[in-house]
Amino acid sequence: MSWWGKIVGGTVGLMLGGPIGALIGAAFGHSYDKKKVHGAGQIPGDRERVQTAFFVATFSVMGYVSKADGRVTREEIDQAETVMAEMSLDANQRALARKLFRQGREPGFDVDAILKQFRYECHRRSTLIRLFLEIQIESAFADGRIHDMERSVLQKIASSLGFSPGELGRLVDMILNMRGGYSRDHAGFSGKPKTDPYTVLGVTRDTPLYEIKKSYRRLMSQHHPDKLISKGLPEEMVRIANRKTHEIRMAWKAIQAQH
Image (cartoon, rainbow, N blue to C red; front, side):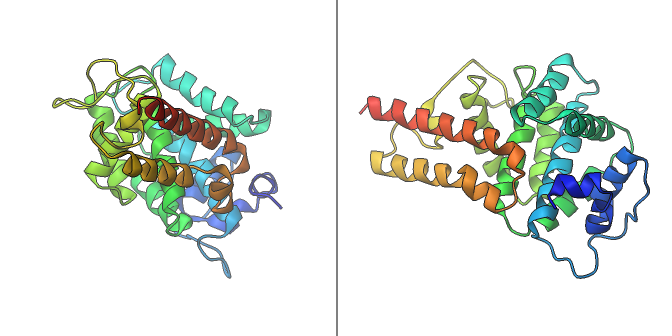
């Protein structure tokens, strides 16, 4: 049975438990033990557990990020809907995603507990955790910039997932350049519009071409859809991974054209 089948069948709470299981339970009007992190005989890293945790954490934390500056804008709601559309979710899956998004906006939402369990369930799958963080960065950027409070929330999320401030900064630069957005400046994540293929690949114009190629190959490996799915990415999210590999490939081609 797939991760979605277990949600529909009502067994996911027993499979996961913990705050993530409790979120699903609340969405379906059931009660699950928030203290229970995993069921008997279950271990973190199980494919269906990871898929469920990724889906639940993605949309609930997106809701949390959208409320970071004190209000939820139409653009932030549209961004969540865009992710749902990109995933080709059916009506029932969209309904759950929307409920999770709303739960993340609630005052009592325990983001620390959700992130702690999400990281536990992913069991050292760093590429999967990185993609999750990239999705949250895109959510914060929904209105065209990342505000100070959103920046603080992203730093909190990144730290909980084991990313340093420098790693977060590089991911922000990569995402904003992929989106043709804003580069970081000394005041934070804002500035003049900029699309730079070198920044997308995490290099500079002075970086030797062979080093740029190594960075390109590393990023392609980190975002390869088949690799991410094998690590537990819900198959519904394959189009997100495909989009990212396309953007990385286009950046590499743009750099090649300059040499």
